[in-house]
Image (cartoon, rainbow, N blue to C red; front, side, top):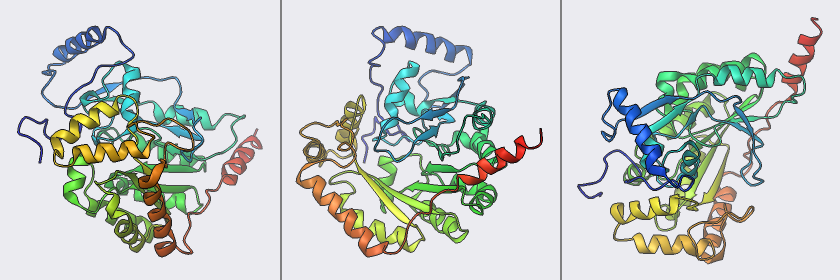
Length: 357
């Protein structure tokens, strides 16, 4: 579907200028020198893992419409390469591009488990679910090598602390043992993103993610083991996957999902240019139609940053999408719901530890 000159196995087909660096070429020169020292040809399409050492790992989420209060990210950048990903913009804060750099330059926080333990042991901390990850996927390919997510799950289990997980990677099943142990005390919930039932669509939208079959199998295995699963039909992109809402909802319900959620695509920041470049190469026959329909959902623009509006959109197309999701819930999820996570056990654990002194 892509033209022959495309970058194989990647979502973005180019890098875009970093809006935070007027002299972005100087940042790139430094990076190219680093690559040369490491013995890597800078543009050979390989993924480079770069260690970083933040002082903290848990972030307070200020947005009122993302459904979480605290999040943590073990990795910045994501090799999955989902073309629509809102997290691409965050790579610019590190001096990289939101395009190919986001997929090929992965920042690795090896100290995340220790930082997490320090955070939740604070006397002032009152237990509240912490979500892995609010920005990039905690089970992306880097996790196979570094196992940071697994170590963090061990910390949550040790301190009886509630945790939420967002992923689209079947690698999650590697940690089924610790997930089952957490679920026993209502300490974990999983959110799995499934955007399409069509492998062709999946491959061009999300080139390095787990297949649809593997994700469906993951929903079933988790559900069969008592681990609650919400499936995120996200994002819904008009004229790409909007026609799949009802069959997708039925399929994930049949697989054991407890609920579904959705967002309508919005192309904020640098993502508008990246997505536009991509769709004219990947789907030239419908590129104009898709871009115009996305604009119709967001007041005539590709981006929408208004809290309360940006995730659901506006106008007739957005209404049709939102109504279809509401119908899917009534039809396939009647009587189902995601359980609340247990915040009491962590407080009991802390009190018990204090009594030892």
